[in-house]
Image (cartoon, rainbow, N blue to C red; front, top):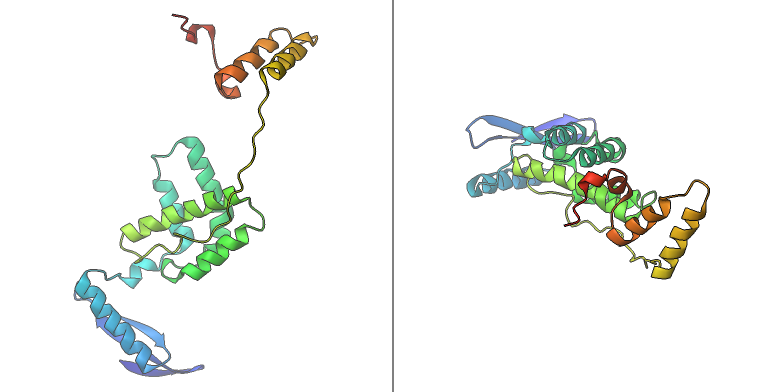
Length: 214
């Protein structure tokens, strides 16, 4: 343990061995007691197999989330596009310059709370889930001891009351569409959409050869 002077006063630097026996140090402790507590925590972590090499956690959130995103070849193209948008628009601008080791739970919670000012509760959850998934890989990879983005306090989603057309209203809508000058045959589309649950993209790609009447 070595004291040294800075413009802000005396600081302490500690030097210790990692599990692989190589040496490293950490500086910036304001008191000798803080430095001793850190050294004790390192020894406990080494003895319990939970030691995290701090050099592996110096990668920034921007670099880590970009690498994580690029590794997700298991995702569908549409899902990957959404994930890329979340990383690019919501995670990197706010947290990108922070090192993995420096992102704490409080900072993650503050970020999530700020999202609520511009995003719906459902969108906030989706954005936070992307960050949490990326950070969980950092935990599994031994870069950080815990995921600071799990179990955050997020806005509740209000249950919306859905209204559905009655059979009579569906029939009236189909008749009204069919009666239009350019609506011939589109009334049938209304009925198929209403009673099969198909999405428009699915229905528009449907062909007669795809149907099995047996």
